[in-house]
Image (cartoon, rainbow, N blue to C red):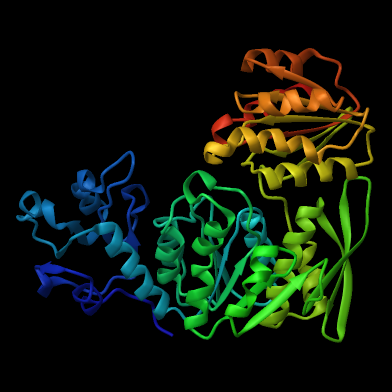
Length: 462
């Protein structure tokens, strides 16, 4: 297969496109939106983002090697004197997505798309690691899971790619339907439906409606849809789809999992049965939530064609995703970095995990506010108290205006808890209080910057 390229026909077919200087256009195999990454001849798409407008870097793009440009139609007058091919479109962001879809169809690769309220990044990493045992894999990197990140990942795949693993996220209504039309997955998976993004999507049913666009696009292609039967909303809607693979721990499923035990760091031994085949393995990651993520990944790998030995061997290569139940062992403590983000469901999963770590009896949870819960945010924070059972060995340290609600409820049920009104006060506590010989887990929404408290603890225990 030859190198994948964007042709003049691809550009003509963009919605509302007009091409200037078309005779000098030669097909290009690189598409860029960031001038800092240009190091070879490319097509540069000028996108206006939150911080920067690519139209302000047109000359820089040309100087670095851009051989053609896509610009917004309303910028034509400013760039009409350019002597290289350039294309005007009504909206460069949408044009970027359209081009990514054309690139996706030029790839000789199957597309696996993952979304969900919790665990999608870890599941994506697990799927990629398993499939790398047998295929040439390209996956979403960093936070490239939105209307810009999904096309960016698609363009990072070339003619050698056999499996393209895409994480697709959402904050607002319409994001998943938009990116799903770009990715057109052959395999689609929703990890779960939780309370994330209720500020924008209002209810779990609307969260499912948003995320199920991934299933709908896979269905149109005759693709395979993976159904988590342990999630009540996903399971309730499974009859809408024809070509499904079910997986789960609690209910009958095509791919059935069972947790046999946990070691003293909370790592599960998991048993998996798929039709007449069965195997077990010890996960290198800790916690029940990671066992659930792995079962989802194993379901995808088994359906795509990996055998038991390939999955067992690949599972040993799985590494924790930074900030997601990432365990750091020290002589006098175990630190669990779960700071990447937070939702009510992931806080519950973190608490369950903490109870399974047997290395130290004393447990400390450092919790910051959970965002994107809308008007019900105080209620959700209050209800977090319901996940805690009476336990003299746990201390819950809270910070943030919303976590005050949890703090008050925990006091009522006699869970040891301290609320800190300032970041400095919590920092001093973590630096100097007697918290040796404990398992300490830190968690909160991104905006709470809980990683700063991880840094303090790391410096203390190193």
